[in-house]
Image (cartoon, rainbow, N blue to C red; front, side):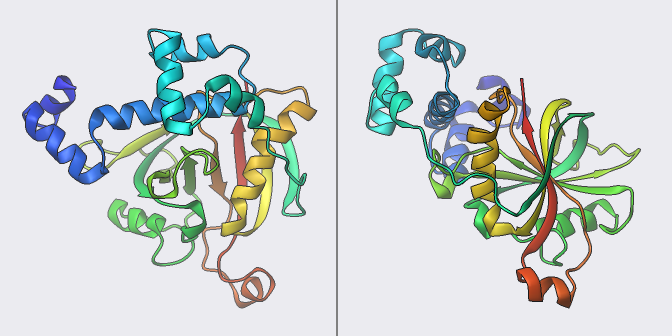
Length: 261
């Protein structure tokens, strides 16, 4: 923590105060919450060992982890894992194709958004965070070298809506961004399930849950909980009247990427 405060050129005392002001919780509470939510996510994915999960997330004893987990979720880890199976309705017609691919990775400029995913404004709209990023970076979204991504850090089944994290990301082929001028994020390379998806943006979460919790087990695959899922928006143009008449003005076409082991 002291190192982070030094990088930000604040004393530890003032860094703590500013962090709590902007994030609504202390740094210690923030880190603890993220660790416990990561544990809950792994349990939903079918983590085989509670002790191994607790240890990998920095808890020194099983008892300390159980106590903290129960305080956060109201039940013991073993009970949560046994009861967290959620029935999903299967693949929707919005999923047009699905395949396993290798993603090469992407270096992006980004901006952090907090709140429910259903409130996101699609990239093509002029007031979207992607348009704001494009203006700051001096590019045009419709250029063929520009790609729009969205990284989904939290699961609404686990995380309270006000603190859900989403990174709107922009990459430009052949260009790197100055980290002192822009917030940057790297989308990791690796093996992913890629689903071509088309529909109103507020409907994406339902199909994310199918792709994360139902599809892998039915196809002898396992989700990698160490990497977040993300989406790559296919069309960055302003939606046409025909799009609006079919799916509403919040329609998007995107590839959803689910990280696999």
